[in-house]
Length: 394
Image 1 (tube, helix red, strand yellow):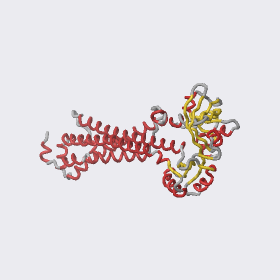
Image 2 (tube, helix red, strand yellow):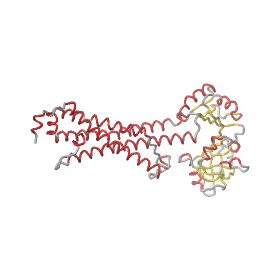
Image 3 (cartoon, one colour):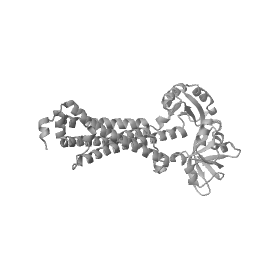
Image 4 (tube, helix red, strand yellow):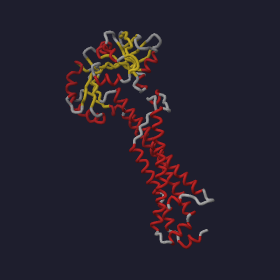
């Protein structure tokens, strides 16, 4: 009976039209919420994975400058802390890389080539050459894809790395042993990797390191573990985790996600108002039928339930269509990458989408509940109709 009431009598198709429009409004609102949530979740998740992938989970620096003796004693202390997986020495510096056709500044990073975690991480993004080239007899360097493109070099070609100095700049020739692509423009246009020994020799830091790179079991526990490390090492060391270093960016992304969900959630609210308007029109058109039902013994509670069910039907059908449309568009983007992004602006060159069943269920339930709430006033009006006056309505 609820479904029949949503249909129009012959010659009065307007009710059917606004019913379809209300259902479509719910579908569009639910689909928009699912897509926006999937996009923001995918962007934040991808951004986090790139950050904790290319950078350390926790970084340890000495406030006195460089860490002596390759940080052996500090590494032993930090490794004993619960939750810590690996502690690796790192040599950091800035330099000018010059090829035959161009030159540009770069962030030099000397890494432990025996660290299996780093080898697998960077090795996944190697486009040309090999990561094992850093251990070859001839000095080699790994360049980010954007950095190599700017220099106009390929694997096997020489580049000159110059370190600025107050007296005489240090300069040395390296062969491009490989080109990596991390998927983040900032990393690929900035970083160049050297072996720990070559980096220390180039920067004049033999027997010393710049920092300790700490990897933990669960990246979400990095802040708590960083606090324990700081307490153990004392005031002579500065300890920071990846969340602290990128706090502003993560906070901005989280706020943006909430604001967008609230704004687009208003689409569902508007659709719920359309449901209320539709049911009010149904009450006006079906006044005589409602009077007949009450005259036959239908209670006010039955009439309210009838119109509440109509709103739930609109919400359920619209939610089902919206969930199907939203997830289909997310699948389409993940499979075919139809939307590309300029990597120098948005950090990634692909539009990350991460749709989850839980978000789809939540959006659908919220839409159905709003549609039900929209039926309260129309159902109350219908239940208050006087059967004698309602039957006499032409």
